[in-house]
Length: 346
Image 1 (cartoon, one colour):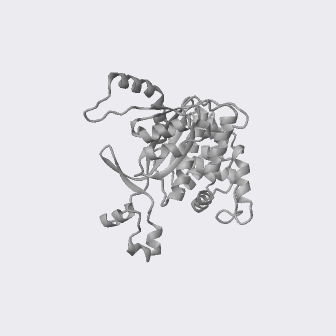
Image 2 (cartoon, rainbow, N blue to C red; image 1 turned 30 degrees about the vertical axis):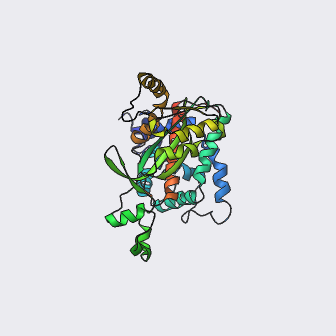
Image 3 (cartoon, rainbow, N blue to C red; image 1 turned 135 degrees about the vertical axis):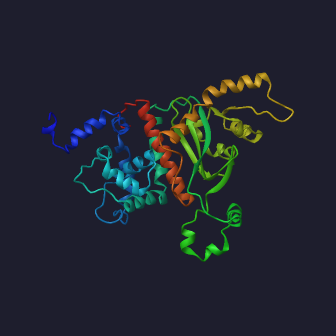
C-alpha cells in the first residue's frame, strides 16, 4: 500500500492528519506564548514545600497549567482528562508530550488545581494576561460591558429543610458531626430561579472590553446574588472616562450615582415600570445601546457551546472561584486566537 512505509502507528503522520481537521489547539499554540505564565507558577511552587505534585514523578508547572486549560475548554472531569491525554495525540502535542512520556494522573491534576485555588493563583494569572494585553494596546478601552451568567454545579440531594438552612447561611446541625458527609456537601452554592427554571450553583459576573470582547475582570458569587450587586465591585480606576453597557437589571438610582461619582458614563438600558412603560425615545436609546451591550452575550455563548456548557465540578466557593476564573481565562486565550493576535509574548 502507498502509506506502508510510514508505519501503522506513525505518530507524526497522524498528527499531520489531525492538523488538517482544523484542530483548535494548533491555533491556540500558534497565537499564545504560554511562557508568559511560567514565572508566577514557578515562583509559587518552588517556594519549597510545594515542589511535589501528587507524588512522583513531578511535572513541569507550565505543562500542568496547560492541562487545566485543556480540561476547561473541553469541560472534562479529572479522570476523563487523564484518559483524553493518553488517548488523543492532539492533546499530547499541545502539552509537549510524546507517547513514551508519563502523563499526569487524575489525582495529580486535582492536586495542582487545588493548590492554585488555595493560593488564588488563577486570579493572578488572569490579571497578568489582562495587564499584558492592556500594556500592548490589545484592549482598546472603548467602552465596557457588564453581565452575569449562572454556572451550574452537581445538584445536592438535600431535604427542603436543609436547603432552607443553607439559604439562610447556616449549616444543618446533623451535618456538623458528620465530617465525611459535610466534606461532600457544597454549602456555598445556592438555588436561583431564572426564566421559570431552577438552577443550582454560582454566578460568573464579568466586565468585558466593548471592542475586543475580552474579559477584563470578574467576580464569582453564589447563584442567588443579584446581577446588579456586583457592577460596582467590578469597576476599577481604568474605567474612568469610559462608557459602561448593561441590561436593565443593572438600572437603579444607586448604581447611576456610583458610576457618575467615578466619572463613568452609564449606558445601562432604561427600565419600564407598571403604568409607566418606556417611551418611544427610551426604546430607541435602548436599541442603540444594544448594539454594544449584546456583544457580551457572545462570551457566554462561546462558553456554553464551544466550551461545552457552563458547568463545574466543585464543592465550595474557593474552588468555584478558581474553576470559573480558569473558565474566563481560557475564554480569553481562545478569544485572542480568534482575533489573530500576533504580538510577541501573547
